[in-house]
Length: 87
Image (tube, rainbow, N blue to C red; front, side, top):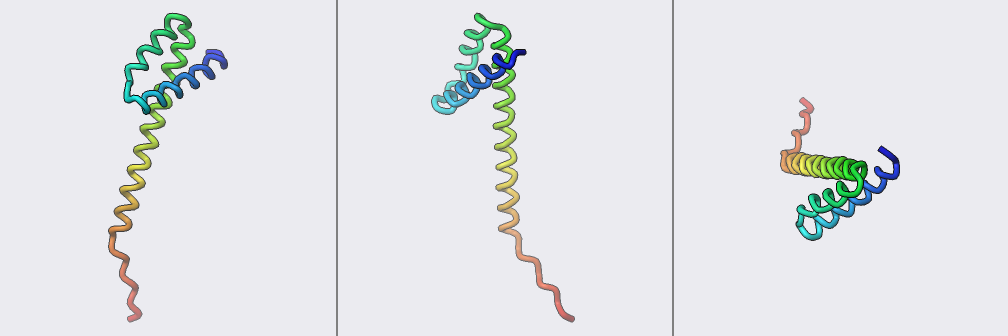
């Protein structure tokens, strides 16, 4: 896969993800994929890969953020450890 195709695919995938966030319309993925497939199989494949990678990364980051927030909430709710006695 060419560097140009990868670069363009990344840009298109980023734009599609932004549009999905703004509109809630995930059907745009299919429409863009069809347009790309009709013109360039190489670009279409690169787009699909880039979109999947970006979506997976987004989901992974969200999981990490939720897990961190839950851990921090647990730590904040936990009683402070008792001070050692001098006895």
